[in-house]
Length: 483
Image (cartoon, rainbow, N blue to C red; front, side):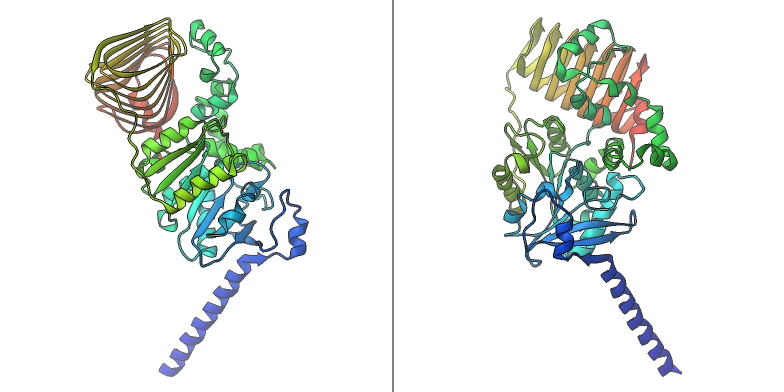
């Protein structure tokens, strides 16, 4: 009886392994040369490139996968962005990369030569797809390089599956900031109807850097957006056969604040200085907020550096893949403190330094960079703050009838920010307030991206856009929490 039982177990084990091997083999089918030719690539692949279809289980669809190089070499996964080309965005640099790496490039579900299944083409769903691709095609954790939307997908993948990758390289990653802050720079359309005073509307029309765009009108408290996020039926009806729209809307609705706040994977950020799709501001915020990152900027380059300047891009990518994070000291602020700085009726100016109090009045397109101060008062102005530290005052930042953009700003005060008929856009902002973080005197628009608030009324991440009429608004950012 024991012998029969033993034989039964052995037969069952052999059958299970065989069934599993058959199932695994069925997930991937290599394409013949005729099938590859029928794909009609815009950029011709090399003869030694191996293409296969892979059956992923997230959307239950077939996707195209490319393998190039020695499988014993360090693995490298390339993830494309939006558009019709998919993996072809990488074709021009793959021959050089394959000399030292085993390359796997993919067409994500819904793009190029992969099937377009139903479902939400969100970073979290695509991250699950990447996990399956890595498990199937690679024997050890790869370095993952993601461009544009693919950068956002790769960032999410690194946050959820940190054990499955070695390094992360983000190339002009799109959609990381809050959707209002992300859409604003590329909309470039003045906002005709707003609660903001006529002064601000006029100045917004004069200065493209601060235009809010028609899309912002609906992005704050949008019923359609809420409906699409909550109803799969509505999503399918609206998206139809439009994978780019599906992926783009899914991207801007994603909240990366928890991922960014907790990611420890070595991350290299490569960015085109002149990128109008994903402005350099995003890269600066990511580099500031990620625990283990460095930023390399390509001067004069736009959104697709691997095509626009392939040699320079390859040099930076090689340094990222073979090197380690280098400590970089931010801009030095002079130790000499100026008691009071007053900017009045000055335009297109940049100021830096150490001040006690700063007063900005009737100044447009002003940049305060690498500044340390106790307090700043801004009135009837258009101002950007970058790498600014405010500490020591009862009220740190007082903004009236102005449009202010904050990037990597630290505030430590009793009351951090007071707004009065203004527009506030903060990314990478860290607030410690002993009384409250933000109060509103009169109608104001507020955007936070990848920021942190610590006050008696709220402690946590802030990644939200709200309209406020009056009062203390700290508690309204509880809705921005996400895991």
